[in-house]
Picture 1 (spheres, each protein chain N blue to C red):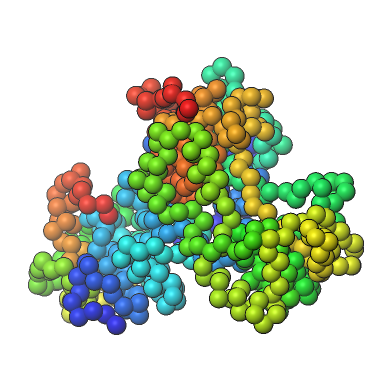
Picture 2 (cartoon, one colour):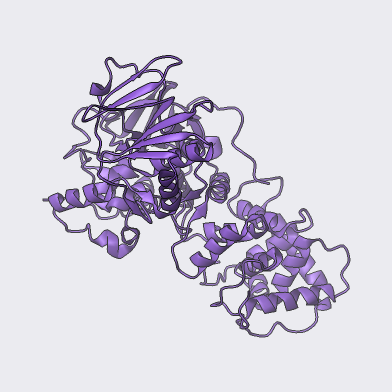
Length: 147
Length: 420
């Protein structure tokens, strides 16, 4: 059973939904990877596959698309939907609760045709919007936290 | 999204900047680290032709479904924001069962936990894919490494390769049976080693050895309904949570080796290399012994082995005691491949069976263009050298040295000091 207080220091239950576990991992990614994943999310239904594909592109392992193309697609998509995503993420250490709330924001935004990967990457970008926007302003400003 | 290794194996090229001999976990770690340091003209030579081939073949043969190493230990590269093994597993949460998920939670909490082999193998495939290792592995058995001038010649059964630097990631070979056990070099019918399949029609199995491989053989046979004789030279089984004390994985553990006289290191290595079995096997083995499915012959030395086609295998133990079974599986441990058989005579500088390596770079002191990563670095890095984490420690030193030399940059300070 999940402990009542959800924080980075809480051990969650083993039967928590996989989508939440994957979401917590996505929250650890930097802005570049989130945007690239958002750009690729239309190609796969599964956020895990997208995360690993982004890892391949970062290493220059081609699959018919490169990182800059994925980044450009993700940036366009982020700019297109950002205004529709209401509210602010706030600052909380309860990452799982924050993830569930972020997914609700995406679901309530009236966006159509979202698969699980797009929903997950949009939720992550919404929650990490300050890092995503900072990356778009200055791609060389890499956060020190290992992602 | 994660393609497997290429179906066709290209011919071994005649030159490369770096040749890695052995594409096991150590070889993968070295190639990955070199990739991040901008050294891409790297060739891996491996007898199986597959990255991690022998390791996973052995694990499959033993039906070992978890590794003893924790999630922190993997052949990926630190410091470049590559996906870590623990995150890789969590990304695949939906594919894990409750036990596997609980192990991940333990790892998150900082406890020691075990890693499912299938998760580890999938992660290794990801690592080899992103660092372009699969298409640089060539199937070749290396039979000689000959340093000369500014290059090193690597002779294989598929031709010769000239490299500027060579990294030996040779791992460990199975320890053969003593020549006194049977006449001639050909082993008797019905006798196999731990890394070979046990015939499925064997109704009874004899297992020789006291380590984890022996325990897997015993457990698999019991699981298949076979009767088992387990022969131990030691007076009793030795159960522990890991074959290498976990403190040796940490910096303070490795520091126990730094500045320690050679003789003390030897003593430590001998003690840590003693065979042991994971605690998890204990209930199964004790229950099977209690109900008669397993007979344990403790403190028994083997004096002879005989076998004949379609007949039983017979093992003669000290004291004229005889054990018979349909198949004999030898799990006598491993021997460290030091490079001595590949390098010109004397160049490995063996001392008490261990190669003479520079502590900062892990280059052979007698030939600075050849390096060792893996178990061969045991007398430098300690008992953890043979483990995955030891590979990473060794890799960091070797890859940095090679990259610096190739680029003309500053080298890690090499040591002239010999251990006394």
